[in-house]
Amino acid sequence: MNPCLSTTSLGAEWFYPVIDPLGVAGPGPGGQWKFGYPFRWDGVIVSVARNRSLSRCQMRVELTSTLAETKQIQAFNYHNNAWSDHIDSDPTGAVTAMTIQKRRPGEGCHVGTDTVVLARATWMGPKGMYAFPPEDFWDFWGGCTVTFDWFFDTKTDPTNRPIGLSGAQTPPPSYPIVGLPDRTLMRNEAGTGFQVVFGGTGFAADDSVVSNGVRYLDMFDPIAAVPFRELPALPVDGTLVREWNRDEVYVVYGGTKFHIPDEPTLFALGFDRTRVGVIPPGGLTKLVGTPINGTLIREQHDAWNFLVDKHQLRRVRSREVMDARCLPWRHVRIVPDNARAGLPHGRDLPKDDVAEFERPPLDPDLPRR
Amino acid sequence: MPEFSFDEFRLDAIVGGFYDAREPPIAEDPVVRHVAVFVDGVSDADGMGLADDVRLLIESFVRDPASFDPDTPRAAATPDPDRDFDIALHGLNLGPEDERVLCRLIRDLVAHRRAPQRSER
Image (cartoon, rainbow over all chains, first blue to last red; front, side, top):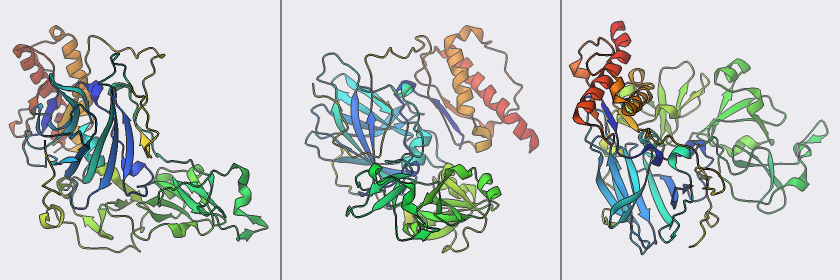
């Protein structure tokens, strides 16, 4: 297969950043991330949830809207400069859906979906185009159900006043994205105690531990505590923590702690002491023993990437396996040497195991308009 | 017309910002339309920054096609038909001759980028 190089009739001003869910604390209570997109003339909520029925080379795209004007999502191929599939909104709000597939190594340039284009389906043809850069689109949302809730448009506004910035004016996201900043003191749900926020999640502060006459919460002003709000269960990837009155520093990936043995390792991993959050005593018990499924890790001086699949680490034997499975290189988390030692390991990840990862699209009876 | 707001949604993040009519619009070059370039199926070593380089070439070409020599190659590229690019140029509104020249310039650029790596193999 020859490599593909394409330009598109889609203007660069209509490409909006794709948010990387792994840079966002969560997912929240609903098991999905929710991102608000104030597009140039439209308001859309994008919900992203991992879908274990899909490989990372697939994506289920859903559209819902109760707006009178029909909205459309097109599965767009750059090389063809055309869409190969599309869904239209149902003004009753019913969900319409399609499953799209990324081009795989070995497939021609005319095959597969590079990105999706959101458009208003007017009598003059599609209007108000919004799209996403293909690499980010697949790296970040591949293997997910992505639901577009198109809840607002400016169709009835005679002034045609924009509500958002153009894609070209929209700055890239700044990570990590968390609901509350580090060291925020928050009341607990019962209102009887406190949590302290690090990496977007709350760590319960046990005030019974006294060290040298000092309690952990002495470092905070209870007057400044914010009311309780539900936060993600696990800290965002890359959060550095140390329990109060303990020396051991950990980096958190996939909700699991990885011990950083010394300062040279801390620096070699691209961190420094200033980023280490001091969490309450016992706070590490909040973390999970095995990284969440889909986490990619590699030890500092190891040649192999490992994918967490069904709560086991599975070795990714080659670059070809990474590419064939659409596993994003930028999501490989570098951990200290020997960090894998205590984690459960499974068999190597094969290049193709269709039966395991690629089942038919979900809900084939859903309307496609 | 109803006012736009995300208030009723519990969001993890908001992408971008809201239009503010009081702020002057960001000046955009009325002549040069920024081009979205997509490169797929190349190794990291070949592909690093390639799309950006091609985009800059295309934008320069679209701005002033006459400033590019239609015949002189940029680099003496070794023919490598097995690893040629499939190039599709959409949305540039070029004539057939300009498109032919631009395609050749892109191939020269890609060959130039790949040449050092080939000589190492």
